Length: 297
Image (tube, rainbow, N blue to C red):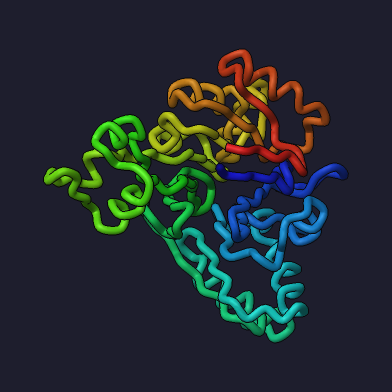
């Protein structure tokens, strides 16, 4: 199960009720997708360990998506962090991070590694629990979306395995050796197991509606999409390379997504119900991101 906690939901300008858009993925470690101003405070507020932040996945290099790195790295310095921090991002990330942390007052005492992505790429990060892929989206700067997926696991066909005589320690034995012999008959692990694929989350970052967002969102469990404007302001959305709530809903519907969460809202909308209802008219299982909203996928 994947645990997502939203740290903020605002677009370029924060509001009194929320910092800019960012969320944390919590496994054993903490992964940040964008890093809003005050990210470390939001992590503390929602009881997520900032000390366990392993990677930051930046969608693009506009300030509202990276300002929180400055305070976070300073605090990590103060608690004596030694572990490497990995920062992923689009073209230009390596030069930007190098210059940013070359400033003496900002330079961390722990290593920072940057991974720059210029095209669609699978497995930019992978561990025993999750895999992260990156794909280009269309904004007014080089920009990425991210796919987060649980690693598949081998599961036993319990009834089939027991029917072939596998029981007790034989389950461990066939997992370790890949085969067992029962009454002279060899049984292979693949004969009694199947691959169970994990849950899939898509984060669009800032973008106009794109074929890539639709492609990667196919049958996803959760789509988190830029919803800066309502359809009433579709012209502004197009000019500023953002999406409307209606755009998000159409992508979710075409992709056969299970759930849609809208985020990155212009501060002109004091009532986010307007955007939610606009999307729900097309895709019913829609919600809006709010600071502290926790979603288990």
